[in-house]
Image (cartoon, rainbow, N blue to C red):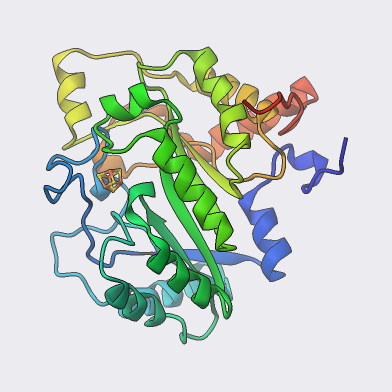
Amino acid sequence: MPALPFPIENRYYRYSTYLRQTFGEKVYRISLDAGFTCPTRDGHIGTGGCLYCNNASFAADRSEKLKPVRDQLVEGIERSIKYRKTKKFLAYFQAYTNTYGSVHKLETLYRSVLDIPDVVGILIGTRPDCVNNDILTLLHDISQHTYVSIEYGVESVYDKTLLWVRRGHNFDRTRRAIEKTKQFGLHVAGHIIFGFLTETRDEILQSAAILNNLELDALKIHHLHVVKQTVLADLFAQSPFPLFTEQEWIELVCDFLERLNPNIVIQRLVGDARPGTLIAPRWAMKKNQILQEIQSELVRRQTHQGFRLVPAI
Ligand code: SF4
């Protein structure tokens, strides 16, 4: 078996390890809201957004006028230096779909943060159906001078789920976007959500092999949670459906990590929601404890990420 890219005592390839390997020290992400919307919100595909999504549950509050991203970033850096003692930063274009605009607008936006001292790169969250060759060429050009990573909302590898959550694209679109992005030499991360009623536990575990086949550099794993002001919240109120318990989630994540390529950096192992927005499940509020329990379970099993790699399908 080839050497693992992470210390075995960590059990999986932590993002903090990758950032230290890449930048030589701790790096902190500063989340930005550039005022974008999404095609599932502005009427191009739909108006209600994806079934589970309420950006206010993790991104900035839009009830007040948004500041320019440069100002958001400078303020975030000042806070981070004060409370975390971090010296390097990544500008994280996180809210909504951050490639949903003209190339000219995007270039002005992305380049507006690059000359801020100690900003070592940009992270761009987007949808697989909202990139094209012009945008990827722009990002490739920027990546010649600084670190660039694109984060795609994969959400699920199953079309039945993507249809149910009103995503507006299928999995083939995701596959093609990731392939194309890798052709431009860019770092690619994916977000995946586990817990939809459309998928069995076996199907969730099988998705590891499908993701292994995508050339993903990094992955964020979220548990399905119900947050306020979403279609999912309405459905949950009408007829509560089962969500993963804490113990089920810990075991599922360990089973999944054992099947995942160990070279894929793990950026997240549990979803996040602001306390005031979360309906269920509540256990994710103890995020650090859950992460510790996942680690302990892998130690108990004497396994690690990639321990049970299965051939790609
Ligand atoms: S999940 Fe992403 S694409 Fe869907 S509504 Fe939310 S921000 Fe927009």
